Structure formats: C-alpha cells, structure tokens
Image (cartoon, rainbow, N blue to C red; front, side, top):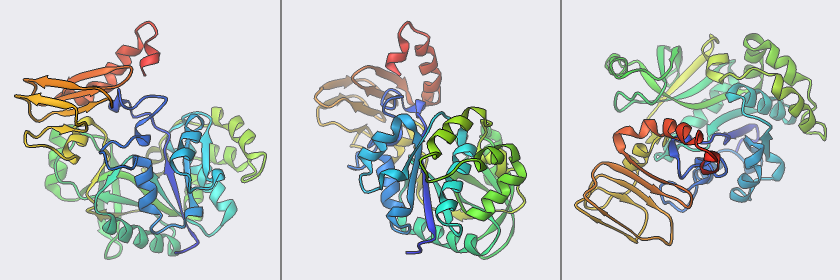
Length: 358
C-alpha cells in the first residue's frame, strides 16, 4: 500500500430522513441498516482499508459521536477520530482534516468519503480510487467520482462533464443541485450528467491551494492552528464559531477550474431514504423487506418493516408502506412520502418535550 494515501471518513450527519431509527444520539451511519452484520461506517472502513493503510484512515465527526466512532472502529488509533465542536457543513471539516494530514505528510493524497453510503461493486470502487490517487499525485487537480445514473432521480445532485482529459478522466463543466423530475429526465437524455456521490480525491497541496484562492478567510483561520499538538483542540474550538457554514461543493468545486470526474458504475446508493433501503435490501415472496423473524404479514406487500428486537408485530392489509418501530417512536408512512419524513420530524420537534424523540 502507498503510505502517501490517506482517507477521511465524514461521519457527522444526523440522517433525519431515517427517523425514528436514526436519531441525534445514534445517527444513521452507526446502524446496520441492511442487516449485513456491519454498520454503515464499519462497511466504509472495511472498504477503504483495502487500499489505504489503517493508520492513515481518519474519521471526522461531531464531538458527541467520537466515542461511538471509537467503539465501532476499534482498529483505528484513537487520535485518528477527530471531533468537530459544531456542524459547519463540509468545507470547514475538509480544510481542517487536510491541514492536519498535511502536517503529518506534506505529500499526502486524500480521499474523502461519506460514512453512510452503500457500494456493492467494491472491486470497481478500489480500481477507480487507485486511478484517482495516481492522477492526483501527479497533477494539480481536484477529483470526484461520478456515479453513472440508472434513472432520473430527484434526490441526488448532478455533475455535468465536458472534454476528456485522459481515458478515465473528464473535465467537470457544472455541478447542479437536486433537480425536479423534468430536469432530471433531460439530464439522463443528454448522457453527459453523473450523480454526485460526494466522494473526492486530491493531493493536499492542490486542495490547500484551492481553499486559499476561493475561501481565503476560512483558510486564514485554519492556518493559525498547531496541528497534531496539545493546542489543536483549543484552537479549533476557538475558530469554528467564526468560520462560514458552506459546503465544499459550493465553496470550492463549483468555482475551481481544475475539477475532474471519473465516471463509475459502483452499485452505489447514498441510502438517503427508506425507499432506497427497501430497494437495496432482501425481500420475501410478498416483496416485503422485514428484518425480524417475529413479524407476521397478511395481504401485505411492498413494505419496508423495521421492528425493535424482542417485539412481535402483525400487519394486515398494508401495501407500499414504511413501518419503523423503535423504543421511543413509531413511524407509519406511505413509501411515496419518504421525502417528507424530515418535515414530520420538524413538526414533532414543536411538541412539548418533542426533542426527546429526536
């Protein structure tokens, strides 16, 4: 393995569209959503350690989840699990981790991965990652993996590419936020759009240069810290409230002129909704996705059912529904409305003591 290759796993999100399984105290990335025996963050770690040395893998998460991350990834050195004092979107955590890694190795190449995505074609993933590491180590480029779309999906951002740089690399033309259905259909028809998976690869020098050019104020704040020292945490806690809350996409990638994409067919899903869990999980003869042996169904099909262990459930006459039962909450919702769960959670928050169900 190349000792110059590093990984940052971003594990700070709450995953409110996965309520009530995903909560503020125990968010989505720490659950075994598909019943594989490994949680989402564990699967991400298992996947990337095939090509990045374990000691070079870092996790950045909310300070509140640092201990949970350590429990689920005991192989990682404790100092490789980094806590953010507050959520500031993805630009801040990226410049933080790039500076920290650059302090350890000024020649480092870094891949940034979300903690909670599904990738079924792991060999293809490793092949693309190694190509990207090689390209990033030799060129001043910012690379993203773009997923070959299989349908006009409104739940993903899109990347439009233009001319070919190399046999596997295309220059990025535009980044587009989540479109409506008509626009998504037109993207698929043109053939030059890919799904944005939020997977990035770069050399530390290239991304630091981009931050200095496009987010100079944020760069100045983070330059002031002494990384990998006793003073790092105090410095980070001081500057985090001051820095802009902006994504790496909006802050850097949409502006930079040296962004390239590698189209990839990875069997990928961000598992962003209960419907995506349904689509990627095993189903019985009635097309129900059920993770418990103590659930009986009658005249019911195309449902996703998650019941707390130690509890029995009988479901009769339900079709195309989400049923999720946890210790504190019960969700019963049509699968077509799964994008609204985030809104339901906000409404619940307005209840007296509603926070305790989050």
